[in-house]
Image (tube, rainbow, N blue to C red; front, side, top):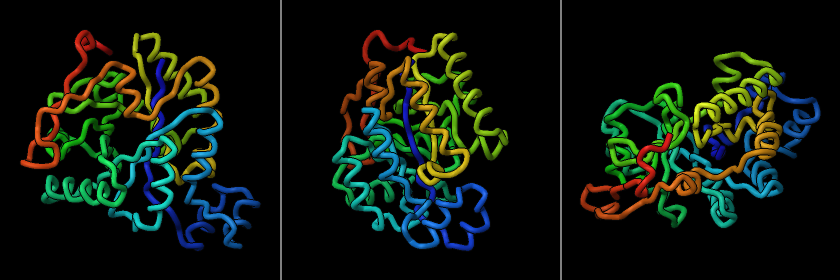
Length: 274
């Protein structure tokens, strides 16, 4: 089984009153460090980088441009890219002119980082077929907004929009915010879910853990989960995952210009991958 590693960044800091309100999520030592200004508990980019680097793996970070000032973490994002991590757009869906906003936010983040973005994931995993088409026309290679339960598979596949869809196998917010699992039950739940996917013949399974949850109760199981999965599996950032599966990007359109995105095709012989 190939494991895809990904993180959404919904926030990079919280006011002290919020931290104190949710203080049960953190240890006493963490709270003291936060209050003294020694550690921002909601900025875990470098901690995740250090953890993943020790394991020899890389992941994808989906970054929004409207939830906070991205310029505050510009240097961190450049470190991610230079270190081999991937940055994608975390698009916040609004009620009007979605296609325009997708293009505007993608182009701004690309200009800021000096890199073309391959991947996109909707904030809150809000997605529909029209939005998939908007993402394709904006020039993305893949989307990762559908839960595996919605599309009936955990392995990436070619979507009718022309994108590659990379289904989310599990999200931390579902584990702890919706299912209300303890850490131990969540760990067993995810490992069992991966096991069942493998037994069905799935080739890949994607983890989504928010960067801001890395140090808090619940999200901190990411460390144990990845270490356990790596005992028998390999892990990749999402752009590498689709290539490991034989998904190949072919450029036939004008990319950013002309309203035509890059057309994607599956490597010959991989059309039936599950």
